[in-house]
Length: 499
Image (cartoon, rainbow, N blue to C red):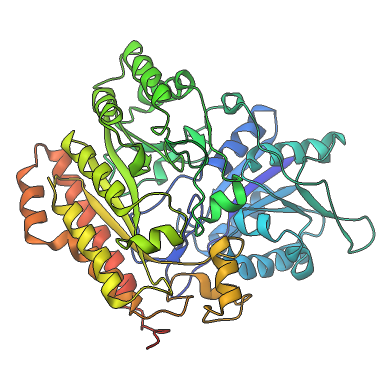
């Protein structure tokens, strides 16, 4: 059996989208953001290790034309095609599936991702898809489904499919999450084209891993933010970690084989919320003589950033932390279920900077209940944190809040009549404009937040902190990326603001 894990190139006005491994979706002018799709890559690796012939074809990040993509897929002649989808492109994927199945009726087509996890039966009503796999561990369920097709082994939990001979949709019950993530293989980097991926804020050559799945909190439990589609659909708000030894072994493999100089851990909350894990990871990195040979960066919640955690991270070789601010407004954080205060976030980020760690701050605007004054508060907090002990490599991201279907925020917006569009106008969820009725000009505020990078104090301190040619390359790449991100909002006419 031959399996293709594929991303058809879905362009809008000549722009490629962020789709694979992206919690938030948009078509963008910035070509510097190409995040490694970890779960699909692990699926490809699992299949190959078990003797299945695999094509991993990322037509989006390879920036292929539709003709080039179709030629490569047809030349491979797959028996199974796996597509990861998301709400803004689900209709395009339905259309693609129907056209593909018309030409290749015996090929089995599988859909995975957060949107089909939330609404699994919908794709059967709108396309000729054969299977929908729900849940976030679809690397494992894809493998199990292929085993079912090959050897009639049981279907994995969380599988939706058509009953033989009719359109009735059956399923195998709720999806399950695997307990021991150490059982997963290290990704076959050659098979999945690792050189394609990277971001402007990472030193090159770089690559990505996931130390676990789900957003952990230092105070216990998982993240429950009402806007977070991955936590609410894929991970059941349940954090799981690989062992420190397993993660360190993968980093050692990446450094020794591929000469990687920076690894980014794209686990939702990193692993740093677990101080026992962090202590053991430090010892593993030291035992393997990896400290000083590789930079390590990750996502992190601000309330995980204690003095001990920051000290351990600095000693272990951590360089950059990607931390969510979301809003500088206390009421908004509470409304979103963030379980952090503005002061918690400011304290954690400043503490990380005190220990010499770089910080990438993520922000959002366009909440239905926020006024211009409250959007200004987010800008002021972001500016304060960016200019505090600024160093080359500190950065900020801003986006329009999108209430993805399947999240509590979407359900609230539907109930309260906050949506600008019908609930199934999925193409509108592409971040080209607001989806929620908003009191502010979202494009203006997003562009304004991105421009914090041009604050004189930030520029001066960043310039004075340059220590190497690598720092200069990082900053130049960041400038190019920043220009694209600002264009994303300046080129989009504002709509949806209400008085």
